[in-house]
Image: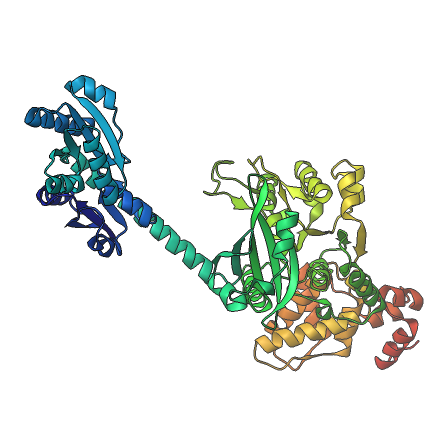
Length: 605
């Protein structure tokens, strides 16, 4: 609670002040009313624990000089109070000349008062008790007959046997001083709460924060800064460089055996550096923050879930694709991944990001084909409050902002409408976005990986896709081979899927019969890896035996595709429908491997 001291110059003021304080009611301020005249020991004791001091005359002047941090409310004399005292002095003593002896803060016009009262009025300004006695005696020497003064002056006049009339405090002045104190208390309580919040904010910050003036004196520092450097600015001497250059910069320094990033930001006053704000980030807090951020991004799905080790297979085509994608990981250029549905475009996008220098930053994936144009634009670029009907209060950051410093994966890029393509081109060219309904441009540092299963060049020729955007997206291009061209990878993936789904069902993975393997190798796989995965999952659900046969596969394909049974390898070869070399090419295997499999199945070469 705010504490206030009311210094009354005479005891008769106690009751009027206490009555006014009672009428004020609950105000968040505690008043103490004390009778104190001039400057005494009692004043120093009374002021010590107070936030606000109400006083008048030389008592107020002394508080202002000696305790400048205290909020002083002076009991101001009104013109009526002074005029009333002069008239009372004139009528009581009939003096030729009257001196007003009062503190320096008194504002009055001696000539005007003389005209109004018909008495020659002089004004003597004082600052303390010694001044008061000197002013009174000098006035007597100059022919002053009577005095209008405060209670200190009245005491001296009593001692000297001089005529005087004290200036009393009126009801209006009492009420004004109490009201002003209550208003000041509210402001002080607010500022005190704000300072406490700021102090807590600084002290709870994991970074060290220091403010120094132009001489290197610490003006403010938080708990972490005190822990890291204490009061010794020699640990971070570069503040002088920031002050002289007027330019912000960062340094890496060892502080208390911890590698720290120290950021120096000069503070300007009237165009010149007046001090420096210093932020110290220690490696320990950076690691903790990074871990929390990555955890949050993972919870929201904004992190790469796959790496190159998750892309299984040993076919030469796959190895070549992975080698090319790894090279793409080390650079910043845009990547366009093309391939049939189900060939693993998203898997490669995740892996490129996970192996890139941006791997610790967000990975944001969006399927452009699932969102209509207007919604896609708001999702990609965000919007401000009131941008359109239904916009969230406060607006919303777009996916490009969320992906800042990381990678955004635009799947099915070929389905983006032309108007959104123009905005996407701006991001690629200028590295900046503008939220819907906003006038402010925001810088974003984002790498773009796009993917499509359609012929983008054909769309460009048809005017459905911007050629300039296509060339910006396809700086690096990666074409993924369909599953039917990856040979033995079909069986590698099939066994992996069978093991995965069997494990989820709590059973041992079944094997594939030789005929089933041959059938899988001969199948064209229009749905690629996604289709193979579905077939394996259904095989685990539908068949309980230790082995999955060709008939099992045919039954799944019949239901899945609604198509005729696929011919077996034996039927294809023995019927002479396909020559062996062509058959080997169709299956994505060498002729030697084909012969070996034919031999294993008891077939003639």
